[in-house]
Image 1: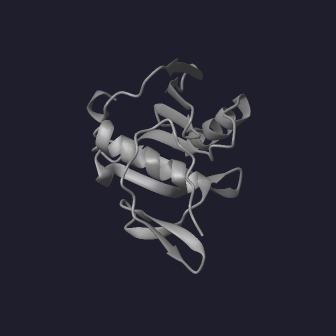
Image 2: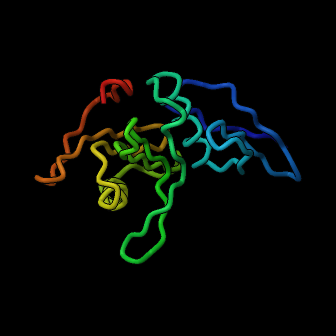
Length: 153
């Protein structure tokens, strides 16, 4: 059985991928464990490495799949980034490459962020990345072309 990953619009990284009982697993450096390699996990792991290696995000300030309550339902944020004071500053929603980034996708991530109140919102399927800053008082998004390095957030 072979694994044919979808090429993403992100740099390639040397992931530790293993095959066990006909399932592929990828090692998550942040959580320090092997995870089932789904298309969404493929995107999430690439984006995490992009944040750490290209954008200089401290690994210790990245939380993966943090829980939150939304309308009395338990939901998970794919990635939440904190500042050095422990405040949430970015919510990142990862989708499989086959999932198109639409207004509905962005709205879902925005609903998750309505709990976190982070200044930054990112939605990615590994092929397309949407970056926005949020003015919560005015309820306005400002979309930007590229994500700045961590120190400039």
